[in-house]
Image (tube, rainbow, N blue to C red; front, top):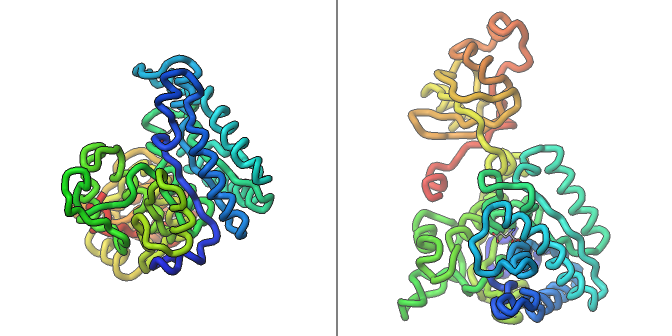
Length: 388
Ligand code: GLU
């Protein structure tokens, strides 16, 4: 696990997230000349091929489909409806892949397209399928290029942004390092555009509320959108044991320098605890379908004794969910955990305060003594939750 700069040298599997601001070419978009900064794509391919030659496995998470589609449809500079954006993505995605295919072909490296939706990852079987496909592509020596499957999702069920997608892919594929290439070169302690004494933060050991505050509002603090989304992505990835670096995609050689342990950009190191894949899936991927309120005794048993949640400690149940769905566990109006519930919401309402030995009498059957088993339960860190 990467805890300091020098550990980066050992990174074997790397996710490189490339933002659309680095790929879309406004001049060529205006002139309708293709919309992709081909020289940039080529440089990224060259830098990634150099890592590949050293035996490292790299996956690219790339935006740019909508921007390229706009060019092809002559829709540049126009506000698009959701369906128009989806159509633009459908047209731009093959053009994006074509650019990567061409750029990597000179190095004799094949590329593969992986289009994912947040919904795909919520389904455990599809999650595992996507992970196995990634492994098989690595074994075949090709570079997977991942994007959101924009044509089938709308805002509410999207990953949200490709920083988030990059973090989830880095966990899905068990990467050692997520590198977010962007048009700012690091996280600063103040806005470098207006504050001449702003200092680059080279290493972040823990993404605290103070660190989150440095990102400011998207688009306001650094004159570019999205340091906040980069920090959120870094928090998701580092919790799962994947260190994250934010480096400039404008400057050549950053990837090699970073992988060589040089003090470039900002490194978000991994802390002590690491979520398992299953915990990550429960906390970062699934949407809770309901809430279970618990009493003080049950809260203490969960928080300090590593216990499973038993029906006797349940005080109230909110929402509609089936067996196996994700729920939030709430004590004193604070969400203390998330987990997969062994019983449906309707059954849970009948089990409020019921001792485990009476489950069968109440429901007519009993599959589990607990309502949320410890293995399917993840405690939430109060400080981190408040941070985000
Ligand atoms: N999936 C979008 C595209 O390829 C980009 C989303 C993002 O950059 O956050 O155009």
